[in-house]
Every structure is written in structure tokens, then in C-alpha cells.
Image 1 (tube, helix red, strand yellow):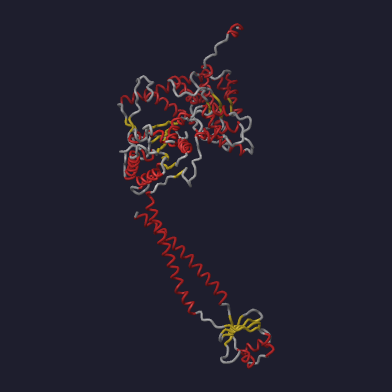
Image 2: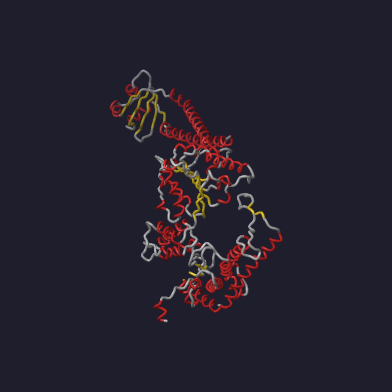
Length: 635
């Protein structure tokens, strides 16, 4: 608080100094303007000369102010003379030789003499006082505002939707495609918020907290807002990081203020985004900052325990790291219900696409089913980005409608990055990239348990010099050992092809080797698919250090670690042998694919399959249709 006050006073003092300088500059400028008008060069002359000038008709105007005569000549120069006491100006000028007729031709005005000395003295004294009072008043006002702001630190920063005078959430379940199971779970929460008496009358206790988990981009925040929109109740939204500040006790104070406001507005929803920012497991603190976070978490636990049986507050929270949360958060009575939002399947992706292309002009050639098939592993956020990128590409080409071509190009842009048109690959680089991608494609086409090749290209995108896109015929979440080995062989296909053709390998295979090694390590340590048996060697997770991933504490000996390394090498070598066998047997097909790639740069699925003279291996795996009796007779 002390540091904050010093900082505020220093800031306000600097601001007031600037205001004072600007005000002083304005006053000086004003006096300069007045002085430029009041202190023009005036020549003092005698009455004798004034009479002569009148006779020469050089005088245009005379103003008599007390004992002073102000003269304006024909050439607009100014003059001044002293008036004789106890005699009129007319008689005085006539006595000095001025002609009466010439005197009458001059405009003569009489004004009473005003004494400005008192006003000038008052202005000199009062003006600095006014300026000083203004400065002190500004400093006091800002200091007071800073103190009030410091006291407001403990107030919640939650954004409120759905309350009277606040914006509506504006989202319902109709605006969220896919995630049907999650919607069903949350509809019960909506019913409770709409009609709590029906549940409370039966003695039912609705979950106090609902935790939404899932991969990034699966729509956790969107789903929480949809619950508020469906229930039409006040919705308090805040991020976990907004509780923590520099000062001790601010986080817990904001938690108290948030739940205090929520109790006044019940039934309502309190939504905490990125719960892992404050809900990490306690006991891993390394300093004051962590202690403050733990105090905030303790306050949340206390507030959720304090809900009465008939409380109409539902706490929603979301995170994509449920594994790091404190166990006390997940016990019954706090976050009772855990809802997992999975990546959308093919049907859900099509529905999400329909929502995201709504309002965008599409050409008749657009097939959303094909786009949904080509985007396995895409989250809802990825699909929204895809639709937007397609619209941007169409606008860049000055088209009035989005075609299938823009949507397909947007997929590659989201996956790999923009096309590097400015990067001109050398002939040697193109040839190397063509053999590398052809190796991937041929191994994938002639090994069992692999995915069909959809597209091959040696056009540079993002950080890649070329790419091979494979799309699974069926989306499965369970994989067998043979499928992993085939996938590893496909990843090593480019490496083996380079080695077979050029006798050495390039840096282009770095990412492939990394992914293949990761698969091999999982086969041994996590999936129990090695000769070491059905043992999980992942290790126990330790504490978080400096915000990094949780470290692993080995639960196995160094001898076992050596055996694990040996098994990993064995899997890599087995996959490499499979890839090498296919590459050597199908070398002529690789040459054909390379020739077409160097000529066209991009091969689509149909063109590629015509070159190799067969359909994808995945199609051969599909169950054959039973022959009808008519077909048998024909045979």
C-alpha cells in the first residue's frame, strides 16, 4: 500500500507540474497579446506641434482621458500630449495657433480617467493563489482516488451477464454444435436454475460445482455461456488469473466479494475460466506468490463448503489441465460433476462447419461433408478458424463467394501454415523433398494398418519444404501395436527414401524422427506393448517447478531404464526395416511419383493412385460385401 501511494503521488505530482507549466504559458501568452495592443509605440509631442499638425490636417482623431491627450494621425501612428490644466482643449489649441475651422474638423472624444492600479495589483496577487489552489486541489483529488483504488483491489473483477442493466449472454445450446453428451449433463443444471423448487422439494441436491475439461478449443467457455443463456440467470464470468495480484490477501478478498455478490443474485452461475491458474495442487509453493495463490484456493474451497442445502448458486469452471488440480477441489461437495468435452467426430465437425459458415456466401460446389472428412483431430476453434481463413482467401482473390478450393486450402493453412510463395526452392531441394514425400506416401500405401494418402505436395508451407496428408477412413480412439509400428514406418519412410537414393539423410526428417521416437517410448513406458511386459514405466509426477511441466520421479531402477532404452531402439529399428523393405521393393513407383511431383508439385489422391496402380491399403481392409444370389449366378 505504501509503495502504491508513493507511485500515485509521484504520478499526480508530475501531472500537476505539467498542468502548471501549461497554465503559466497560457497566462504569459494572454499578457503578451494584451501588451502588444496596449503598448504600441507612442510618440509624446507638445501642444505647439499638435496645433501645427492640426493646421496641416494630419490629425484624424483625438481622445482626451483626464490630463492625457491620445492622438491618432492620418498614417495611423499614435501620439500623446499633456493637457493644460484649468482650460479647455479647444481654447488651449487655439492659443497655440490652431485654426478654429481645422480644430472642428478633427474628431475629439472625452473619456473619464479610470484607475486600474488597484485591479492590476489584485490580479498580480490573486492569480498565483488561484493557480496554487488548483494544483493542490488536483493533487488531493488524485491522492484520494488512488487510495480508493487501492481499497477497491479486494473487489471482484467478474463480468456480469444476464443481470438487469447488463448485457445478455446471447448464446444457447443451439449455438453449440456437437458435444451432445455434455449438453445432456448440463441440461439438468439448466432445469435446476429455472425451477429449483422441483428439485429442492424432493430433497435433491444439485451439484455445487461442475468442472468442464477437454483439449484447448473444444468449447468449454462457449458451453458455460450457453448454460447461462438457456437458464436466463445472472452469469458471473472471471478468469482464474484475475484473482491474483501483487498484494497479499487480494485474491481471497476477491473470492469473498464474488460469492457475496452471487448470493444476492441467486439463482445464478459463477464461471471461473482457467481454474488451474489458482487451483493447482497445494504444497508445491516456492515463495510468497505461491502462498498467496494457495490462500485464494483455500478461500474458494471454504466458500463452496459454505453453500446451504437450498443454495441456488452453481459454480462452473473450465481447465485443460485437470491432472494438476488440487484433490480437495474435486471431492464430492465441491466440483461434484466432471464433464469432458472431446474433440468432435466427423458428424459433429460437419455441424460445427454449418454453424461457422452461416452468414458466409458459399458457392454450389462446396461440400461440407468432404471438409469434415479431411479435418480429423480439429477442435471447434480450429474449424471456426478454418471457415474464417477460407473467407479471407476468397476475399484476397476478389471472389464474391467461398468455393471448395478455398476451404481445402484453408485446411492446409491451419495445419501447416501459409504457402511460402516468396521462397524459391532450388532444383536440388525440390528433388530431395520429392523423394522424401514419395517415401512417406509409398510406405503408407503398401503397408497394412495405415491411413490412405489424400495429398502429396512439395510446395513449401510454414516451416515444411513439403508434406503428405493422410486421412483415416475410420476415426478410432483405440490403436493396436501393429498400427503403431506401421505409423512409425510411414514416419521413417522419408528418412529411408533419402538414405536409399542419396546415400545420406537431410535435416528434413527431424520432425518425423521425433514423432516416431515418441511413439516408441509410449509403446514401452505407457502401453505395455514391449517384451518387458504389462508394466507402466511413466513414473510418478513430482512438483511443478517454475511453471514447467510436472517433473517425473522414476519408479524403476537404472537397469530397467537401460532395458527400456533397448526396447525403444528395437521398435525404431523394426519400423525402419519395414519401411526399408517397402522402399526397396517399390523403388520404381517412387521414381514415378517423384517425376510427377517435380512436374506438377502437388498430387491429389486420384492422380497418385493412378500412378501406383492401386487403391489405398485401408480400402482393402474394409469388409467385403456379401454377394447376392444374382451375382453368384452370373459368375
